[in-house]
Amino acid sequence: MNARAIVLTALLGLFGTSACLAADASIGSWKLNEAKSTVTAGAPKNNTVVIAAAGDQLKITVDGVGGDGKPLHSEWTGKYDGKDYPVTGDPSTDARAYKSADGHTFELTNKKSGKATTTGKVVISADGKTRTVTVNGTSPDGKKVSINAVYDKQ
Image 1 (tube, rainbow, N blue to C red):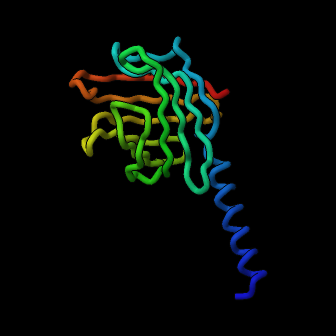
Image 2 (tube, rainbow, N blue to C red):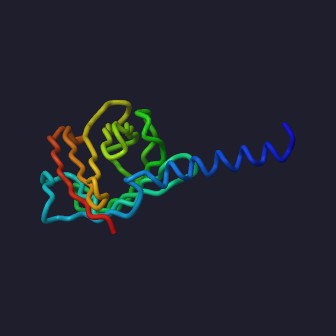
């Protein structure tokens, strides 16, 4: 393969990856709509979620309030492939896996020390303006967690 063909192949791969990520309905800034959401007392409340392309992966940055009332900032970078990727900044979770069902629906599993603690589903509305996250499970201190968070795209 000559140099021109190699460069062209690399550029096509880059644009193809960018086009796939650009079509991802979850990418963007999302703000919690508290009036439409329900969060178990003592569970963390994610006020903003920013999802951005990071090469061939996605980076999810969350800011909110932890179950203890203290500010919470966590980050996850990975793919929607069902594999565990590390979470930083969240004391209740050290790994998270997302699996895409159809580009608008994603399953998620949060883990602490290799053990699943919460599972859930993320659904992006057909018009791409609303993101609904439903999570159920157990907190690190053994309390039941139930979250139905509705986010509006910014």
